[in-house]
Length: 166
Image (cartoon, rainbow, N blue to C red):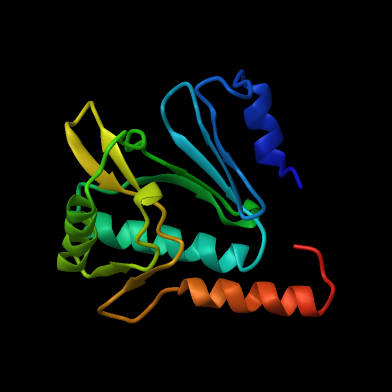
């Protein structure tokens, strides 16, 4: 499915495999624009919930002063479309200890990242530090708001059992 904003974005000059295509899967399409902004369209199981959660958590972290996560620059809820600041690219090497340190640091800001994989850590060479990305399944500890990966797994199983495409 191509959303109206996605069609407009593609025609604004970004070609596949230029700066742009980072991820295109059943659950999200992520592109980096020429201006460096990250454009993300949510799709698949729990798309609306994952969009809302990522936006909520990133805004919460910004309000708490966390500087090693993306900033929400704009959003279009009806299209499940989010634009964030760019936090660099995946590092070529990352120790498990450093990764755990980054995820643990989020908890000092009141957020638990429930998808603690190396793919969710980037290195921002312009600012000279590591960042954590992809907050679809994060939880705000103070309120308990959030999603777990298991929520999406359950929804996927339900869709498959019902014979629905996802």
